[in-house]
Length: 343
Image 1 (cartoon, rainbow, N blue to C red):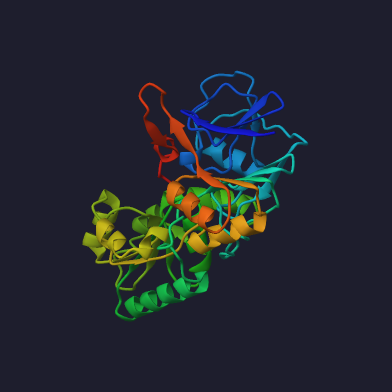
Image 2: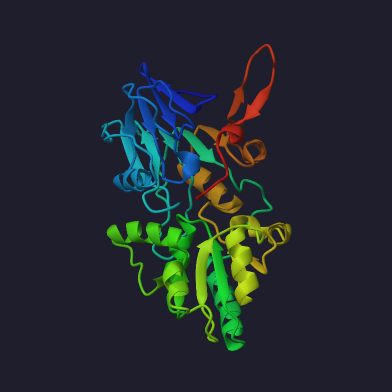
């Protein structure tokens, strides 16, 4: 029998006198720690060796190590199965004893080289609900890429350079892959670092030059347009503001939040197109139905609303909420302990 709870470290699952923390925000005292992927909001700084056994993929471990996180070696346990979660390279959900499934961040859509998540049957499901609201329904991946290509084509026709903006790890590699036919293709140096790691694991990342190389060779000052892939940021960001002011480039941001028109204006970008490495609302419903659990726990994003909607269609669902203290009677959503950065 599994016991699922939340404390100020994050989500904990207890079973057979063993405790495993799922993507904790800081180092807990537990038997196991599962790290689903290498985005910084799912990593924590290891401060001491206290017997934690780390469960994660080799790819996630390598990327995390490259980013300065040190966890030592990983362990393999027969009771745990890592299943591709379709989020970024190396991301996994965790199936415990074939009965409890934790999704981590998840996507069931094929996007370039990213394959859809593998969804098992399980009695208990712990599912992320970042976009667990009916307003967040994404267009098809191919439709978004086609729309972006039309904008780029029009800008190239006018001699205007274009900046594509996405998360440094995950989204930027997809953008590098699907827009590699545009020349010259330039990538921000921080994205090049992640591209090189992807290349080591067999994902084609080539036919581009880095931003520092392009500036050194005065490629940006020429009269021909170019395409730059850079980390997503507000137009007030120093780098983006510099590029737009100096070269008159047009900006296109890619995010699931772009479903809402205000997102473009909040960042001050010229265009924002819906493209996410997470499930949208309908995809989340599909995951729950395919898993067909007896009990569902929701976390992150619209956790409370998504749990309520799942109850309306017949599932026993509750949001994971951390109660700070019985005396204070203060509930703190799990979002408080999971940052929003996806770098």
